[in-house]
Length: 328
Ligand code: TRP
Ligand code: SF4
Image (cartoon, rainbow, N blue to C red; front, top):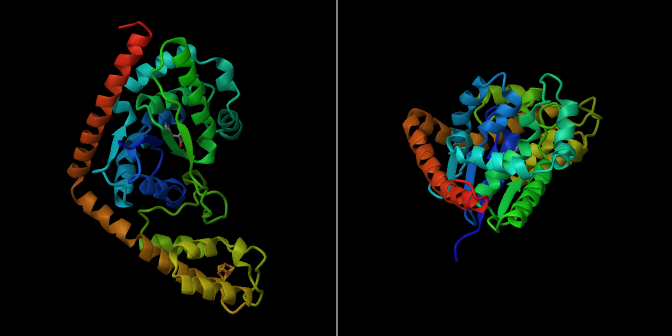
């Protein structure tokens, strides 16, 4: 039996950090053995908010792809592509825009939140309102059975299902209704204890050097109740400890848990140990990254092949779509 297919994408607005790694990429890596995976760079989506600064999109696209491969996504079994290289997405987006009722878009919680939160850019554009319509085109183009995303993207997948249903009802049954494959949210926070994000300046990147990791870890906010070294701490609410749980040996984790509660270890020492584990954990990713950087032509080749595979599927889907809507 052939494998089920999944599609997911990321906007190229910065290189990958540990939030991406633990919030999405490790899950993608897990899924690559079970599903036929299409993973892509959503550069048109990035343009909906970064339209006045497109350089960042161009600069980060290949950084992200190298990060993906370095952390273990395998180009032999996954298909990587760049959204804007597959022009069919724009055509499908256009057709979907004809059948998507405005209220579906206006009530979208992610949209409303972004309009409220993002103040440095004007997001009252036609393109930004249509963001989930483009996302539906990304997903349905490949007739995906599933979409691995975080909670914040679940409404977009729901909208995709509604658009698929409406298209199938109005014309003919071309699209399956994809399921959300919810990625559990990562416990790792940024160094200031807010959600890890490039725009908060609190992220640890996969490409950070040892010195940068040491510096960032030393700045991390720990258990905020623990003012002095002689105060007992609570690892359960300490972000440094969450990192230990992932990157340190189980023995060490247990030891720190006890010592922290009894004020037998100071945060400086604890952070030093965590930084060492983290650097060790990221080592294989960095080595692979260096290999790729040494010969970028291999990465370009991988992307060319991925785009070719994606284009083939997209062009077949569009033939069916054009026939369904009775237009050439
Ligand atoms: N909107 C997604 C995000 O910000 C990125 C994205 C674009 C996507 N198209 C997609 C994710 C299709 C899954 C499927 O994370
Ligand atoms: Fe956190 Fe470690 Fe300090 Fe305890 S000792 S509060 S776990 S950094």
